[in-house]
Length: 515
Image 1 (cartoon, rainbow, N blue to C red):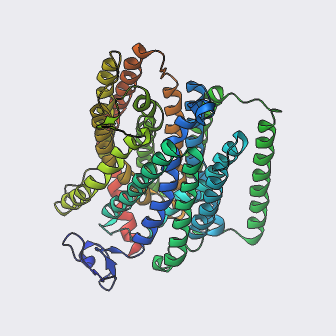
Image 2: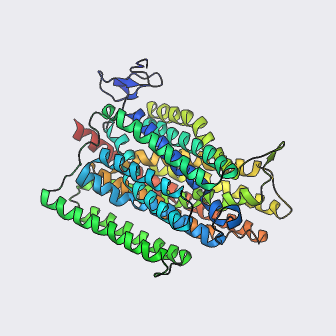
Image 3: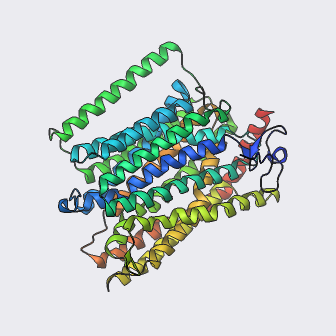
């Protein structure tokens, strides 16, 4: 590969915040690209499977599905996606205190791959066991691979936001590949071929990570705050006890010894996740030995988390209510070819990939002119734009009462969701890496990933109001989500004016510490 050293949108590496002698690719640390490509293949496996999950659960047994009622299926979907992100909290802690981010990424990827292999084996029991393995593996991998990206940059490095935007583009290349391959296989060969393809994607990510981890230059190689040998021993005993308990409970549920109501469980988990988030936040804030500036950073971090939760509760309708709308109420014929339902979700990663370079340049352009908006302001705008996508769906649902509607409605909705996502999501990752106390970075990234979990569980509860047999009620569902998102977005935008000054104090303190 040609060494494209010190070229980042026309900004020399040293001026962008890197070392004058740093070797870069497109102006960014070399380690950004192996991490991004590894994450690309992990996301291929995750989104490829996610794109068909509700469709598979609601399909008739004769069609190779599980014949689960829509409300129950979307509740299971919400619980699954919420659990995936919830496990990021212990995953971040394990990396911070026990094994380091690199090992967490490696072992997490192996467990994810095994989960997809189990999913590829037909059977109700293997379906739920496979989901559980993917949940556990993603909890180890997801927060720590994001944290490693932040560790590649110093506190004063102005390339950080742009680097996260590029990293986010690779995530969406992975989802594009996943939706295309797994969505096509689902329609033409069956769900279990699609699940097998997800396993192959994760295996490719593991191979790439293993042979390129030297480019990380030690980032994430060791725990940020290692425990004493005795503390490690006790921690591993607790971890393995929890794993054993999960295995026992799963076995009891699969044999029918324990009953399980996904809808009731979703409501309980939504409350539980909120309590866990508040308790963990207060524990770090009150008992973490933070100085006054770090405490201000934690309040700014809290605003980011609130905005993120609200955003994902709407955005994650893509895999549930919007996915079912695409299957049942959208005319997917293009000429003589019927577009697979999961392919409609490719609109989002396609726009992410095409628009990301412009957003990456836009943030650098603003930074050079000292006009960088605060994180809260950006996220408020992102929420409002995402909410406008559901305004579009109100009109689409009204038209669906007369018959199947054109693909255009979902394309426009996904376009608005993408613009909102690009305004909010990669910036929020950068914000967490910058606002978090350095010694709690992995745990704060895990706590932030918990907002994805809370958003997903709320998304599942919202999607429970989607009834394919009652088209007349669909506009009200989408109108409620639009009002919710836009209202919270306006509040976050206004509060963001106050937290911008706190963000600047934290940034200045981190720069001083680096010097």
